[in-house]
Length: 221
Ligand SMILES: C[S@@+](CC[C@H](N)C(=O)[O-])C[C@H]1O[C@@H](n2cnc3c(N)ncnc32)[C@H](O)[C@@H]1O
Image (cartoon, protein in one colour):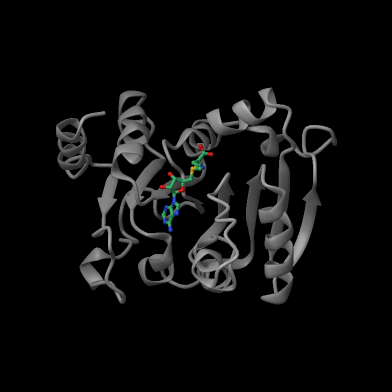
């Protein structure tokens, strides 16, 4: 995609009725007007978010299958969100919404205990062993603390990855941060895991073709 096309998509994204954008660099705490609007259509349904949704294949799939819940895809990359938001509009999905924000600001964006479920599918593992790299992992203690704040009591976080280092890191980080692992699988396609786990995205289909194992963790607090 050329730079011109990218810029066109960014400005079009701002006009979509199913998208909210907060400045990419993010300012914390966010202004009140930038936060989640609990009066928006759909916000009275149970809210499910996907953190780092990319082109939102997973978010769109969940929304199409489950009209009784409201699904929000979150990513910092406008071009990827554009694809998901465009597809939702074209297919008339009214229970999907997209937010361009850094995940670091989720707890400023959503009120405490407002989210019933969080999905994190194939996040960047940031395998460099530096503190800077560790802090960027979406399961580092700072992120887990944020998930705890925005999740409703009894809510759950679902994580899928193809990266063994990230899987082991996440298990330790969750437990060290007071999270409770409710189920874990180190090869979901070899085990008889629950149906929702097997919803696949382009990333996962590629990993399956490459015969890589897909790992899964469900945790709560
Ligand atoms: C490897 S892709 C996976 C996309 C999608 N979950 C899937 O399985 O198709 C990771 C995504 O996470 C997003 N991301 C990474 N760090 C983020 C952050 N701190 N806040 C928001 N999005 C982030 C990236 O922009 C990218 O789109």
